[in-house]
Length: 545
Image 1 (cartoon, rainbow, N blue to C red):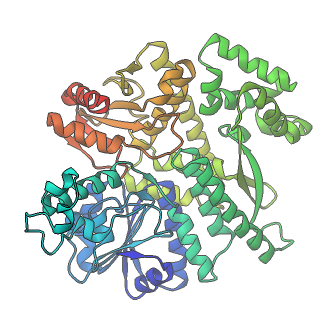
Image 2: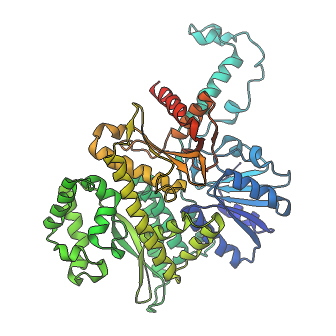
Image 3: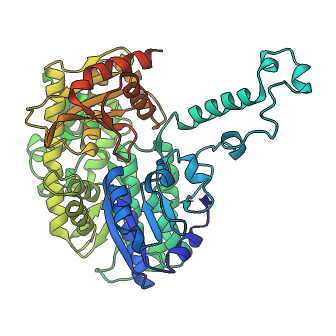
């Protein structure tokens, strides 16, 4: 069942204690922070459980559903058959707020237990109910009707029931073929706070971090981000005017033309240029020629190497004031047309100033930490989002810098050792058991980042590969018998939607490989290591046809 009125959703969950299951993503975490604040204001009791996969979601629901008849799923469950997987009691109400698309049709057309809370019902074109679940009243009649008899096409000889089945298969294939992301759930919950006149700069900041994550991690297109940013900008102007104060301790949001350089305010400019996927892949920084090109880039700006190799905060004040403009102007001559994007900065107090991308890196580092379990990582990331926890933010930034270095090292190893294999319809690479980087990339989200980085880097040297999807398989450090397989769509495709999730499932079924689709992201799966070879063979044959 579709619920377009988010106020109706909030009224329902405020009636009694609510069970809240939150996906451990940046968007899910930020959405939870907004909803948590609203529930505290209205004194609504809740049980929170962070979940990182389908089995975790199922176990958490079965453990606590007998104590809660109202359940909220945040950034998960939309693309799963909730009734089949969770088997809720008849009096249960399950509200799903999810950015993953397409939604499962059984969730949309369930009229009792499952309620899909959406910001735009036209996010995905949904087939009509009667085309999927109902047939014509005379479906058992195998004779063509009189109208069909008058037609000369082949369909006139096909029984009506068979035509309905064929049409249904075509509609389902088209609907489920591509998976991707829709509206940010954090933006949806900020919209709820705004409609209740309870919005503030803090809620807006959390929503900004969420949409920044969607854009920088290639979950939505640039056009989609620009559209959402326009809406955010209007809210920021309104909130800044509404809460205008001369107190330095007040929270203020400020527009910023941000550079796609990783953590450059907390690093040296040279290291940021070397470690950022956007610049490193285009300069091909792992080559001698690429290093020379980077130095030429800095020379064209007139930046002394002494300044570039010291911490950004220690650079001359005049250079820091102008360096972003210099980089934008010089970048155009080097083909770095998308070196900047619109964003916001947070200012509170005299010292505390962070851009959305920097806080995003800190939160992501906590959520994907290889040393913390799901609950501990979620709670640490939640604390990192609190603007008063400056130490946690800086600790997360340092962890993120180390991860950026690991990304570059692994990509360079793939390319230098010629471990990137083109099979024809896709490109893939393997991280074998025994690699020193296995633990670093154990989390699927980190493996997806590596896959995207490798895609950009490899396409910089092999242009034809830009039309092919990229896949990486990595052995699991805690379970060497299984490997994690992730994929990203081709670099040349404008849409951020991917057909790999469906292709993975079909290829695994063809060869009867032992696989687990436990992640909420369709293009992530676990496969028994000994089945990898025949899986890739089946995937090649499937995508060639």
